[in-house]
Image 1: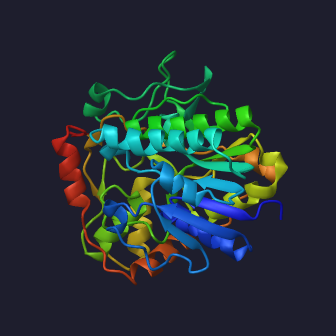
Image 2: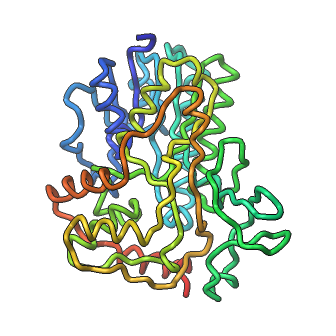
Length: 374
């Protein structure tokens, strides 16, 4: 084992806590730095936090917390970030401060203080891609611009080739495609990835960026209206309400289990073939939002159909699926969890907690900010 003493920033969070569990199970000595943000944790240490990991309540934006957290650490998994695309569009300073400035202060500390860090991995995001990659029967691969509000108000949901006007077919997007951010959250995730990779190269600290697609699984916050769609749908169905689906419900995403995300991170840790690399973490298998609602209802034995609103959110992408051939080729890594297996696991976890139905609250708040349209 090349690296032994691990710091996971944001280690009390959804992905971070699963990563901590995986690292502990593999025999690493793990320390968590987390500020226990009120929106997610209500300021309390979650019961699921591993007792075998050291916990420090602190913030990556504060030098004194970084100094304590980084003592004797040789590896940093930088997971700390506030999440939520919609919320980032009206809490702009909050997102820039925590995500961008937080990462800058972490790197600034490493640049200007003595430390033992020899390895860094950063949680990046597919959100920075913006709209996905498409294939035109005539023009080949195309990265079309986001759909206009004018197009979507006509209920013309699919994308057409900007050159020949043919209907486009979505395909997996590889890591060499440029970013095209369409939210403040996406901008902050791009900045986190860019800063860590640039810093790592400049200071001789091998860095790896892992671009997570749509992650689901236990510990997603059901009381946070900006959590993942699968958790939101589960919350509504548990309360016998139909899942609310935008557009026609046929927009697709790439959903990956949090267990596979944790596994991929640990696979990358000691493998020198991952040094300096950026990898997509998805399944490569698109699934429609409508289908998610239907699968969850079936598994819950609820005869509840999703409510297809034909409303839309400005800036939403239509299709985005990962091309994971790079990590498959270099590290021989593949996701192990099927979507249906993952949903059964999510439901089993959901049965153990009291879920609050806050999706309507989120919709109203987004609508009030002018982001949800008809």
